[in-house]
Length: 317
Ligand SMILES: Nc1nc2c(ncn2[C@@H]2O[C@H](COP(=O)(O)OP(=O)(O)OP(=O)(O)O)[C@@H](O)[C@H]2O)c(=O)[nH]1
Ligand SMILES: [Mg+2]
Image (tube, rainbow, N blue to C red):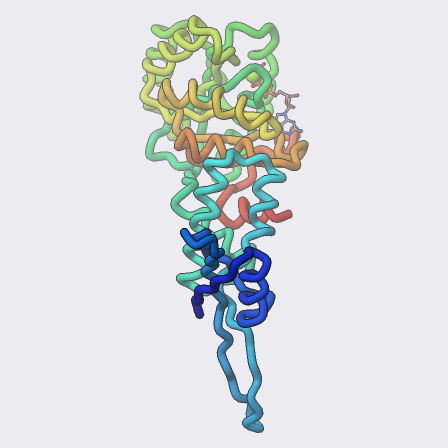
C-alpha cells in the first residue's frame, strides 16, 4: 500500500493533486485544515503487483486485497438477522477470507458460522428424556410424533408422555399418532404424576418424549408452572418455534424458555418460511443448539438435519 500526503489552499485543489498522482482508486484516509488555512489530505492506494506470462510480457494484475462481503451482508439483512448476530458472522467472514483466502460465498459463510451456532441430535440417547416446550401451536406434538417415527425406523423403542391438560383434544390427537406408531402413550397430570410416570418409563424405554402444554412466556404463572414441571425430570429441554416469527419477538420468547433450562431449538414450519433471521438470532443470542427442523406438517416426512452447511445454503438461497 502506498500512502501519501497532499497539501493545497483549497480542498478541491488538494483532491485534484490526489487524483493526478494516485488516480481514481485512491482512498482518502484523513483530511484536515492546518493553521495556515491549507487543506491536508492523506490518501492511499493499493499497489499493483506485476506478473509475467510465459512469453515474458509484463502484465499488471490488481491484487485482491479483501473479500467483498456485500452479498453475504445483504442476505443477512434480507433474513432479518439481528445486527449484533450479523456483525459476529461478518467479522468471521472477513477474518476467514483473509486468513484462508476462501472467496466462495457459500464455503466462506459455512465456515464463518462455526463457533457461532451449535448442533445436537434429537435422537442422542445419552439422556433418554426429551421435554418439548413452546408457545401454543408451535408444533410440539407434531415434532414429538416425528421423533417417535424416526426412532421407530431406527429400531429405538420410545414412549410418549403427555402433560397437556390444557387444550381439549390435544391428547386424543397425540394418542392417535402413538397408536399408529405402536408407541406407548401415557398421560399424567401434575408434577408428582410426571415424576412417577417418567421414572418408570425411563427404566423401560431408551427414549421418553414428554409433551407439555403450550404457554404464554409473558405470563409469569404459566412460566412458573412449566418450570415446576421441568424440574421434576432431568430432561433435555427442546423449544419448538415457528420459523416465521418476528426476530425480536422470537428472541424475547426464547429468552424466557432459556431461563428455565431450554438448551435446544427445533424450528418448525420451515416449509412456510423464507426468512430465517429469527432462528439464527435466537440460536446465537440465547445459546440454543439446533437439534432438528420440521419442514412439513406430514408426520411421515420426518425431521430435517440442520448444520452449518444447510444454514449457509438457506441464508444464500
Ligand atoms: N406446514 C407445517 N405445518 C406444521 C409443521 N409443524 C406443525 N405444523 C402444523 O401446525 C399446527 C400445530 O401443530 P401442533 O403440533 O399441534 O402444535 P402444538 O405446539 O402441539 O400445539 P398446542 O398443543 O396446541 O400448543 C398443526 O396443524 C400442524 O399440522 C411444519 O413443520 N410445517
Ligand atoms: Mg400439542
